[in-house]
Image (cartoon, rainbow, N blue to C red; front, side, top):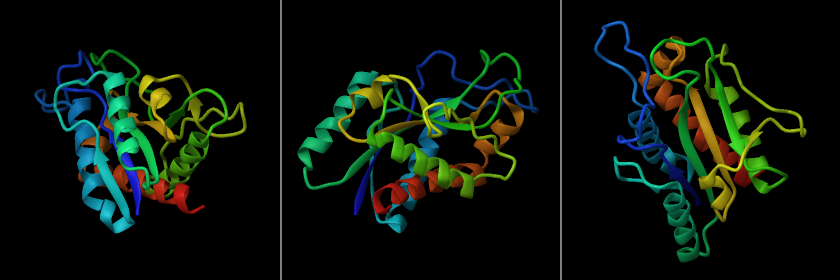
Length: 203
């Protein structure tokens, strides 16, 4: 049994983080709702992958980034026998939510430099390629020999286990947004995260 620590993105009180209005002129995607749907689906499916899910942010309100990392590290210290990874789940955007944009696709981020998180990110990319539609654009940075992008995002930088931040499609791209709102999309995103975690632990 392996443990997946799930950081489900922003909260309902985070400014912005929403799609333009959809065709009905009333509905839109909110990132905080999307990431919680993905986290919940991961939790539902996790036992089938022999993974123990731990949702770090059960609240709807936003939780400071350093608090999220502290929760992860406290869990790891309290459960020394468990093999843990952390994935911070997000939706991406190219604009400010006022109009539909052309950028689309999926990407994963690690901290700067060579770490065990690079292997986790590579496993997530490989899983995503199996679960997502064939026309998915995988956004990569192969300058250092692997696919993940790199930045010192607080949650993954301060985590004491391998940690990756995923940007799961663009909610201000109409095609991506429709996919993110669908059951098929949520299910595929959840399964890609779980399969990637299994690949990491069993490779």
